[in-house]
Image (cartoon, rainbow, N blue to C red; front, side):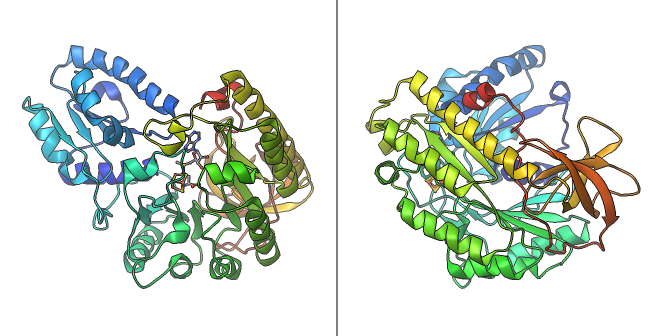
Length: 451
Ligand code: SAM
Ligand code: SF4
């Protein structure tokens, strides 16, 4: 979501004559897009501001801006306590950025953090700088109010872009050679543009260009309709991959989280998805150590992971966020207990991911080539439609090709293989089930805990 927002910001600044540099030392304006979901994301930004203070010291004319959720949440604190910050701009006020930056360059610091009920940045052309995969924000905000979450407070109420606009954007991306789009929203299942629901949007986007893969995230288990599940099944270029955060396997904890579904509802939903979408791959989000979580509650989460056998998961230690209802419940689970439970969850999920991946050795998967492998210039990396990273020798293939790869080995994070043939430029929908690997999944357990 923040990558997509940063591209909107770059689009706005670029249209006003600014150029983008990846060298901080060359920048006249440094804009930091922030996340408030967990405390250590915010701590990292404070650390980074210390670093930028050096550049400001060398060149006092530099303008430094804090954007996004932290700007919204900590507005006056940032202005009052961080003299290095010139501009503070919340997620719905990016149109004001050029004006605020200009004033700051003349010495007047500025703040704009009002939340909007309508802002969608529909007419802004995001500046996408690399790759063949694009993020497309189709809705903003969230109305769910899970008790642990700051998003409804930092990003405001739900609002959707129109189908027509999203379809136009996908058409333009396809014409520019993009091969994959991911439709984004905090809860895409509640997308509605007044006329069309998310299944309609997905079908329309999938119809734009058969050679463009369509992904979406995030789905909320309460709002996932049968119509949506059937739509995913119907289109070859809609990826057979659903990120379906469960958060906990305990009904008592789900109630305290205000997730509005029971574990039974979730299990039944998964059954419907698996019986409708062939070879579907599922991933989830888990929070360990929510207030009052008992060993029994924790065991129910482990049991659910064993039962569903997700291909991947984002796993987090509960982070108390001020002004959320869960904050009032106290932070009752000691940190060492949270860490131990999180470790147990991560270790179990890694074993399941590895087993799911190793079951693919000897089989063929269809991969969209995205670029050079980080470890070798001679190898490509790409993903299956099940969002699985695959690394294989380049041979006579190019970025943007769909290639069939025979899997020769697998870790919990990556499939390795040999290309067998290049496919005719479009997803065939025949990708076999693969475990998902997230970009950070090779990190150590401690890294993940820190996140
Ligand atoms: N809207 C999406 C949903 O409901 O699944 C996810 C958005 S949230 C930014 C991403 C994930 O961060 C959540 O699914 C949850 O697991 C985690 N998260 C949110 N608030 C958290 C908190 N206070 N502590 C730990 N993890 C949190
Ligand atoms: Fe946060 Fe819940 Fe909304 Fe997701 S659905 S953004 S976890 S409030």
